[in-house]
Image (tube, rainbow, N blue to C red; front, side, top):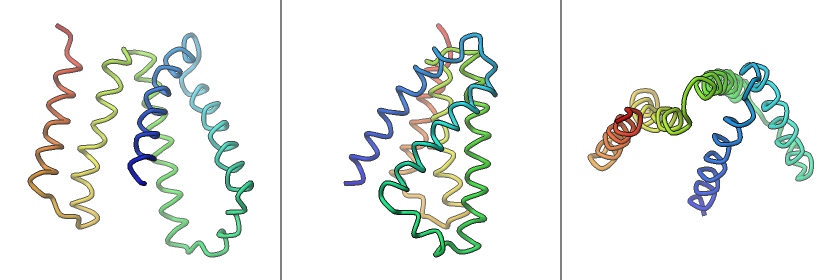
Length: 139
């Protein structure tokens, strides 16, 4: 079942790049990020409230909260830089570089989470890096 969610995530992420590029034309990229963030906030809390998932809030530990806040900060920074990159560059160049996060996540998961790096995973990460390099340089 996880792969269905992953495919949906990839699909909507691809639409995000297209709509963002169109939407930031003539708009300050930080303002665009703030507007996008408010929409995400409303949608996420709407789902949580509709499904009564807010009842899990008291169960959150200090550890959970610290890492969720740090994750939120890094997400915000990622979006700010992504929108600035989209404003200055082509989607066909910005999106592949942004997806280098996959290879970086693999490396960081080995370093910080102690996950094992299999040959298959290392080759996959290397192919992502090579593919990104191929896509970003104009002919």
